Length: 125
Image: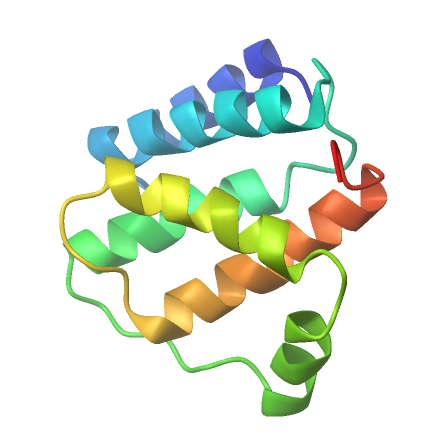
């Protein structure tokens, strides 16, 4: 996925009122940040994370709740070599977002980011 593809995806989600404008802006900035971290213009298989992220942020704005991911999966991801770098990407998202993200959403983002970092060879690790 490249930035123009992400912007097209975000436009579709915005037009369909599936996500909010603020969530789209944060997702686009997070994508650009990840491109910089990975030193890549194209991020392989980024579609799932960058669909989940603006939808999660929109859920938070609407005060909707989500169930936590399976604990075993979360433990596996937390023990992966990509967990720290994924955490730094999530920290960046939180700097753009007003208010703290719920733990359940943070956990899902950790899973998505760690998988994406692994697929893209971990960037500059």
